[in-house]
Image (tube, rainbow, N blue to C red):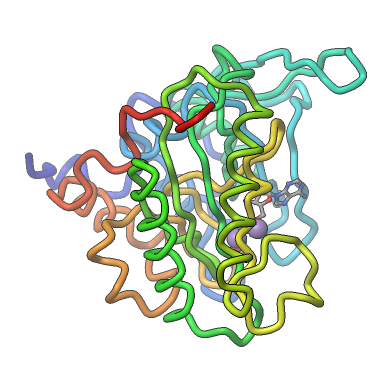
Length: 301
Ligand code: ATP
Ligand code: MN
Ligand code: MN
């Protein structure tokens, strides 16, 4: 279905009804976008972003004075977001509980933006059962100086190795430097099994091709290689959500893409918050149909 021009125009979704203050405040100094433009971006993409962002614990990168000033990573409520931003109590290591945040509609999304949020990061589990991971993410972090061609090839190779194990995966451009390979999973395994599988998979790749891949965080050992960051798959970790803006130069956004589109990409940030309408149109395309969804279990767990 084509998007009606009226709907696609970057304007706050009527359903959201969130008052955005300081609309003219510049949030991205090098490219000039304002808080109002950021809010309009999120209002426009809410319908394609919420299927991935809703009903899972989220962490926010908030930059109330714009990305050039102090930003902070926020996991817990400060009590001031508004009634579209909900709480879920999650058990901490010490046995106590902490309230984490989740949203389930455009209002919640926009209330976060009103509070200075630029980036939305999500858990790999839903707020309804935070002990049941439902997606695995391999975050490919190239060493500085490594070309994007290498990253793309690595992502495709990981897709193929996952396919060997019977797992369908999807590509996402982070809006930064790398590609995320996303593996949707049916729930039914726990965090230990989730993390173990991710670690073993990443270690096997680095063992097989030590010149290309590394499975440990060490920057010193990364020289000329790609770090397969499997640590996104531990309980409590987050990863950037599809269609989230990034607090980086040019106001780029993380985007889902089809495997056959990856080849043509020259970097991991081809779209910015100026492209809301284009992203809505893209999301209707056949190649993105079903992106991020697959009914499959982790093998051998
Ligand atoms: P790039 O493609 O540039 O690597 P990225 O989103 O993958 O972009 P990374 O630095 O590889 O960025 O990933 C870091 C991940 O760790 C983020 O996706 C985020 O969810 C999480 N993260 C970022 N900052 C913090 C923080 N201050 N505290 C905890 N987790 C964080
Ligand atoms: Mn990364
Ligand atoms: Mn990483």
